[in-house]
Length: 99
Image (tube, rainbow, N blue to C red):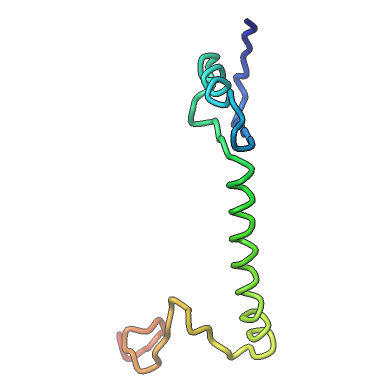
């Protein structure tokens, strides 16, 4: 067999279709030749498609929110994690009476 060395290699990305044989062997060969398993990423095309579909769906949900925010800068997203309460004394505003 042939051996190789890649001391400057930062990562290896392997993309495959479900049912492809030999992926485990390929990873074993890479590891046997000194490539850390931490540097090897294996992803199926099917998983890539699912991820892309989920990202597109998420982006589709965000579009109306962005349009509303653009048309009305004072509009606040109800889903926002940070809700401000002006009556809350623990707010971030500087109050000289606190000192």
